[in-house]
Length: 551
Ligand code: AMP
Image (cartoon, rainbow, N blue to C red):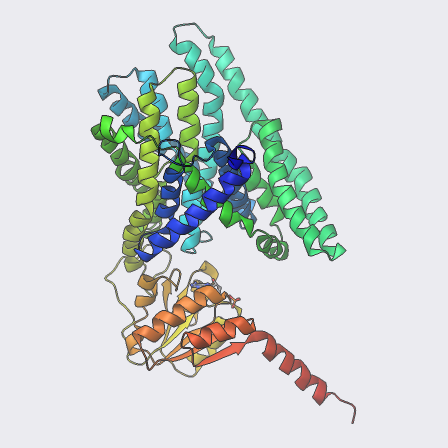
């Protein structure tokens, strides 16, 4: 069979094709496509008949997804952002890991394992998947909000703890067999690892911070888009790989810091973001690779233990993280979002439990429980998010200052109000003018700056992704007079227009576009007026040229 000669291509082809097929199917059945991606992995896994993709290769491809994803997250993060949440995330992540580990160890004990086995198992349950969390936040436009910063800071701390754990695990294994290990050796190992991480971060901040932006600018000046894209991929993947090879830092953390130093200026942030179209495809392969790890026997052999594992991951971790975030006096919406983000396990857990098995610290049932628990919790995660985030949106009331205020839901109730989607460069101008003319204004905006501005201008503001039906519902479109869709992205704008037209056939819909194709798309979905930004710019230029023409 040809796939034996080209296993990499076979794995990519089967992974993408099946993920696409099952993703579409899931969408039709109104389930998250993510469940379809995992199912695609199950179909090509060694545990099911038929074609078997190479799970080692799939795992590496997924790792590229993690690298590009974390690089993209880093682009939108500054060191200042990280420092601003450190006081919460450092103790928060550590306490959460300790408590979840102990609960997991308790379950291990009930199953008759040694405490060492229980602790390794508990640790594997205590960490969350970067990919799952980041994607959930990205989808809801929550990454750049305060809760997004807390969640990402939390990931960074967790990543550091994991690096230390992986280094110390072999020593722990020696101790578990009864051999004496001098405490000085453990301390030494810890120090060396911390030193390596420290050197990596310093190198990135001192050297990388100068060299990488300089390289990007230099490349941009060549005028070659191809070279620019190449630079982005080369630096993201190169730094991640180097970080892992030279400094024992995880790929994810390496890529994250590469993104942080590259994203110092907003312009390069935007340019770089645009150069990352491959990211989503690889992130999908992550879910396929998770599905491929499934061992179906665990569902039959140890259903109760598996159920308990899932309860610890989903309910236990969510509850612990929620309580910790609340203890730091952050609002309930933030606590719920972080809790939903933590209620799953993934790539770290696989690595940990794999190493535990290799060192003969844990029984193979522990691995099967971790894998089964990961698959179930990852598939459940979007549902949990929908549930918690819905509560969260109900609680994020209009005119709330910060995230603290809790009140009854108040969908926009003024008769004949205007609804404005997006409060950025375009939306804020429209909104301010509408307010000046005395209009009742409801704004849906995802980004914190925009939210703040809209509130100051006196609008009623709902936060989140306007393309999400639940978010859009809060704008009370049946009663609205006009809808202004000022977001630049045609796909999401189209989803807003399409839903709005269905909800209210008489609504006046005005939309923004940046290409002829987008104009046509929005027209077809029911917009009354679609304004092509570029054409307006051209006309304004010509107007000026006319006016300044020598007579
Ligand atoms: P600008 O391009 O400067 O007019 O900014 C567009 C604004 O729309 C930004 O403030 C974004 O945060 C916001 N935005 C983009 N997509 C969405 C969305 N799907 N839902 C809500 N707000 C959005």
